[in-house]
Image (cartoon, rainbow, N blue to C red; front, side, top):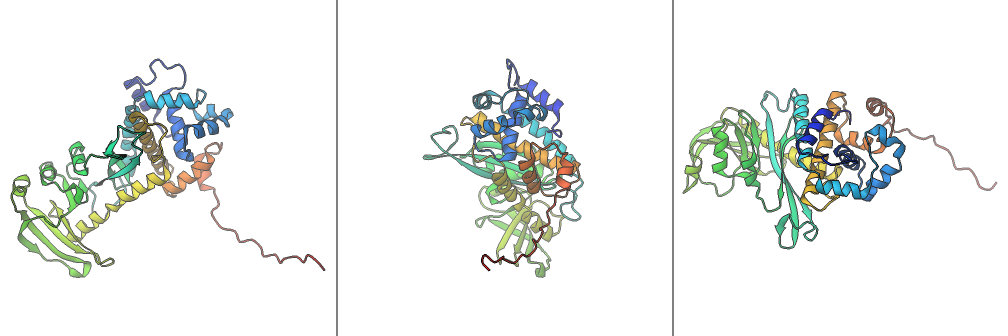
Length: 377
């Protein structure tokens, strides 16, 4: 928690009057409770209450200033504005991106590369009626823009399950010169043309029914898996009006799987093989979703209201960012998975974090071989 910017957190609380009229159990206490649940894999409010009360002599030194109660925590999740923790996460995103900005992602590519995708979290319709998805099912979607330098989520939009992925493009603030890698679920030429108008680049997959006319074919090295590198214009009834500029079409065959992929981009300067490598890097956002679902508590929620769900998700993202910031500032070589596993069993230790992580013994000692003693002579 020493890596959390306390002045910024207090400004976020004051902005939304989170502690207005609160005598006990402040927003900081609420944040610490949910962060504790994230790091130690608690499953319910009762788990949080029992575990923290069992260590009540240490809570003051961890930052708690109030008694932890299940009902009080539930009321805070229902009533405290989730935007407090969303703004805190945005501040941590800026800090983390600055720390990881010097990392190189692809050789000779210094521009920022983003991967855009979404994941669906299934919910019970009777308990979460506000999360519309299907007639007998509820769900929410996490639309995430991931900075591939450090795998830092720079944009997260939480919606109900009905919102189509392509509509998330309307919420993005495009960055000139950056690369946006998306799957073909985001293929909407009217929205993609806004990337070209703002001098941003996109890399996406083409659909089988995309109609086009080839203008020029560039030479390619087929030994690398490239099949063709073409400059095209769209044809058909509506596509030329939605995207009137030229596009680049790269066809690539994966030599390992034998699968053929067709990419569309508005960048004409990068080598064709780099375009294929950029799209391959999109898999990092899938790994990010898998990682947070496995190691953070965003599949089981401590409340059923929309405010409680968003509060838990944004605090989970904040915990992820705090661990990433700690990893960089302490120059730790361990993965985020290893760091979270260590923290999950040492949250009440009084040993400095750096010492706790660097002085651990991961070597497997081979026990000495002892012969079985005879029971009877």
